[in-house]
Length: 344
Figure 1 (cartoon, helix red, strand yellow):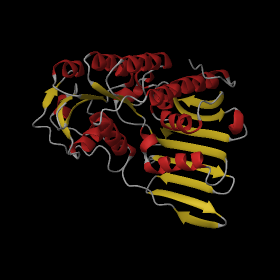
Figure 2: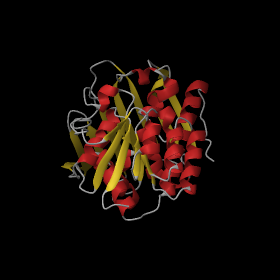
Figure 3: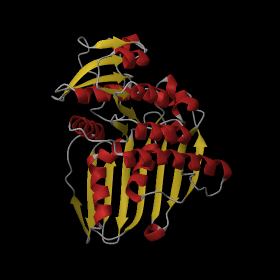
Figure 4: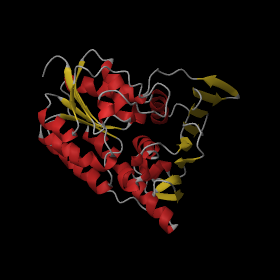
């Protein structure tokens, strides 16, 4: 492999452009190729809009990279070390297969796949491959959320008594989001972030109970769920709410409130970004690293590949578990009953 990691990005929508922004600022990366069916995106005539300020800036010079209208052609023809897949959820598995069969390293944006069954196929592919595989579950790298996991693990403020995560916005633009068959609705495309982080921090919930409703995608576009655990977490109240059914103009907001035996930690990203600790009747603003999770996850991945690290299969499996969790949530909404995620 050359000194610089040669990268190709497939899909130049919001997330693809966000990833391009990160790669363009890294000295140990060479952006070699991009692919998108929309010619105007390939030549910079149109720009996607991100949820978060500073995301999808679209100011990367693509004049010196190879351009492909077909992502599979990039996989087959471009001289790259890593392929970053930022296409529709329904295409994740097929593109991942093509990348790994070609012997390239692989980054797949969230969610891992359209279904849990497809996610299990991706796990098997990652286990069998010599390539490095990473799934873009960005909250695992978002500084304020990294801080939360450290506090939970260390029990710095005692045991976790409750955790509520929330992610709300208005309906996104684009035909892709009007098809739940492609995007999975807000349940799979938006809420999956909080589902993954709960799984990442607390392990596999044994049961879920959810309420939700159908929206413009034709799928579940608003959900409120409770996750039940065994063992030392059996009395911990864990909930999450997510949706993009808010009125147009409602700003994107993501937050968490974690209540411990001795303190409460609250994070919010809306008009600004704050992380506050409430302890002994006082409020303390907690400092945290700058940058979005996308930036930190990509830097982690590039460093791991260049240093010859192997895929963290446990991280892949836990991300795929999130698909089993949201499928149980969908069944709970339909049945009105508590459901057990069908982990394999």
